[in-house]
Length: 457
Ligand code: GLU
Image 1 (tube, protein in one colour):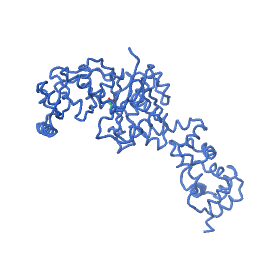
Image 2 (cartoon, rainbow, N blue to C red):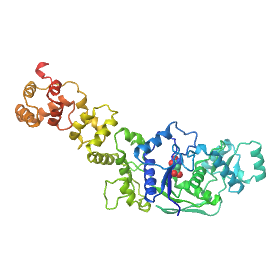
Image 3 (cartoon, helix red, strand yellow):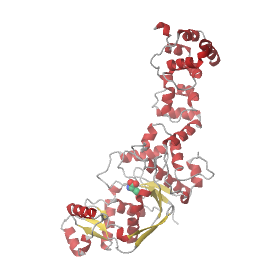
Image 4 (cartoon, rainbow, N blue to C red):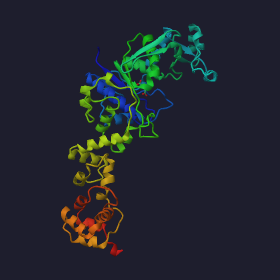
């Protein structure tokens, strides 16, 4: 077989890279690497009404940030450039015309009003909204003349009424559709843009894609693609549909319940390696059941057939846990650098380094660095403490054991209460890193500045 080539073909119609697309990107990338193949990106920007400015750049930036490299793409080019469908219109037109010439497609001149009425009539009869084939009956010479005369047209595929279209899905087995239920799908629109179906088939063929791995929401489009491959006389690539990610309540992952854009996870301080690791576990398990593994480890063990079809649950709490594991096991120098960059160099590196040991066991995301350790850098609003406590601390030696003794001597039976009083005064919060260690780092002078005694109020 020829060299393995996989792809994702995102449409720049959302804010950024959807976490579900990040998932299919990972699977495609890992599969290609496992076979010494190539993973590429093609941007499917043919739906001009849904185009979002800047989305393509953000999608590519998110892939780079995640660390899912691609061998060819719209920004880096490659042997099959351009990789943006809006720049390949002549190719689709030529192919659509080829199908018309072979009678596998036909010009359709129906007006939007007619199509609308037809759809309404079908709906009223509870029938699927399929084209009724009116223009299929026009003599081909006549329709060519109408096109030449400048009449507005689309090109539709000529789906046979008889027979079934079957394809084999590597993960799901054989899937078949009765042709009678397949619509004479528009493949070229009146503005000269292809629809998804034509664009995806032509480009996957020209770009020598060997394996199409995509979300299950495309299963119902696949029979149309299979027919197009047949019409062109091309080999069909291997096809696999992975299950779409779900919320813990099993509904489809949606913005209302969870962040869905990769950039949101980045902003919350999730690490690319943890996200990839978590995504990897969605419908696949590492042999032996190990939770934490790298992409390289996954590559060495991955088989497409092992992907499960049960709905994978994307649980942000589990992702947080995994992210925390990555934080805990990271070399402190590296973690310090990452935090320094995450906060745009706002906090001095040296200080990050000093406070990190107190946090590393509890921090699950980088954003929690600020929640947990912000008080080291910014004084909380003033809270007084009882004057005996302040006085005792003034004359205490400034190390863990000495401070502990000092505080306990003042507290007597009230240790818990006094420690809390001190914590709130110094940190502005009721929870946080170990208190005495924090005081050591803050130093005596800074601590005393933060705790005016209540007698002075
Ligand atoms: N453009 C489609 C998308 O938005 C590509 C689907 C496919 O992979 O065939 O995801």
